[in-house]
Length: 101
Image (cartoon, rainbow, N blue to C red; front, side, top):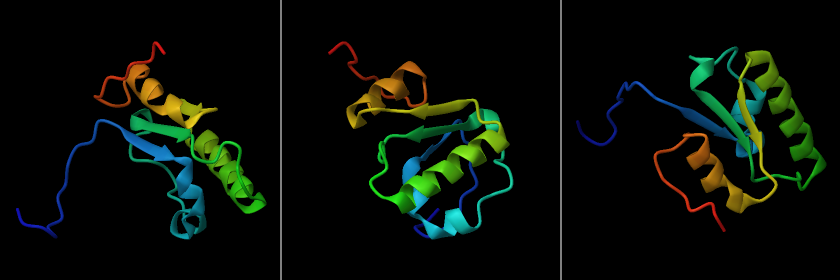
């Protein structure tokens, strides 16, 4: 394998952040359905609350898309620092976070 090769892998979890709301490629042409809904987690943590009306509109579109897809692991954080604790508690990542503070 060399840099630039396309590699097919089996994934355990895909985490989609609210930052996708600023990417026109995704917003204008979202997938009809994820490959496996049980392996998808959606986390809103960067734009809570959304800083502009445009981002707020796109975040709402993502929320509706998540509902259409039937994603069960949908989280909205109030503070960015909560993300490592959420990922650790919900086993969305292999890292362990100190969440007792």
